[in-house]
Amino acid sequence: MRVHLKQYLGVLAVLAMAMPVWAGRSSSRTDSTPYDTMQTVTIGKTQLKAGHYTLKAKEAQHQLRVLQDGKLLATVPCHWVKLAKKADNSEIISNKNKVTRVEFEGRPEAVKVG
Image (cartoon, rainbow, N blue to C red; front, side, top):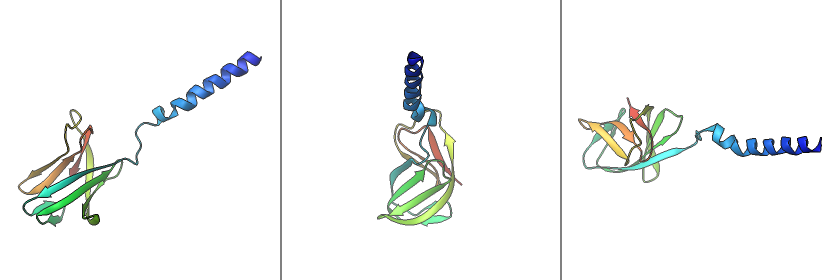
């Protein structure tokens, strides 16, 4: 009887240690990348003048935050899309001065704007 109790407690200990693996990714992860632009660009419905910005996206949320000098300038609707492979570098992709996607280094997903 005593051996069964020890085995039971051992199995419970192993299961408790494995719980973070089962939980998967944390939905509180925030990705961030600097963004420097030399000309006026549009992201969502917001126009950004030439300057230095920071783009932040929180996992499991559908908004991209645009900051300048730590101040929130805009919150832009977006959605996460799967990439063929993890992004080698952070990259802001635009078309005709309009930001369409933000890839974050080491992430298998990107934020698609619009």
